[in-house]
Image (cartoon, rainbow, N blue to C red; front, side, top):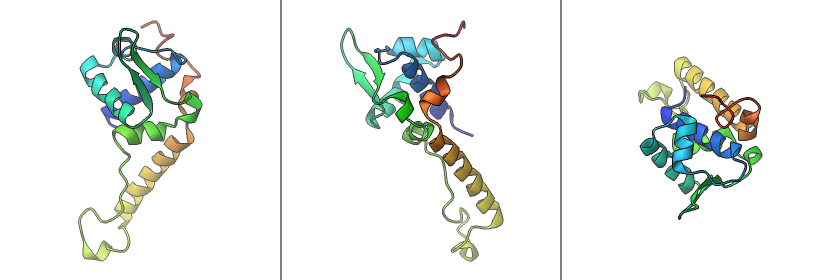
Length: 138
């Protein structure tokens, strides 16, 4: 449904949200989320570029959320790293489908629209209600 990159980005954001505005290092996030640090570094760079995460350099450096978890949606995170694919025109380029999607592609786009709506309606704070990374016994 979503890419591994999008899942890793969501794991990192939830981990940062659990740290309650304290700075978390790449290594702390990688261990907590079980994401390889090299991959996580690239994911976090994308989140920094999109303005969702703040990066601080230096000995006390690390990462924090740019906004409170209640103001960040799942949609924003996913769109920043690997956007939900919508079907706006016939992927086959068929002239008969130039104005309207065929029933197959209409259904596929309807499903993508439902996913998009669900992601827009859920904040990162909504994901903090149960045990996650900071309080897991893994």
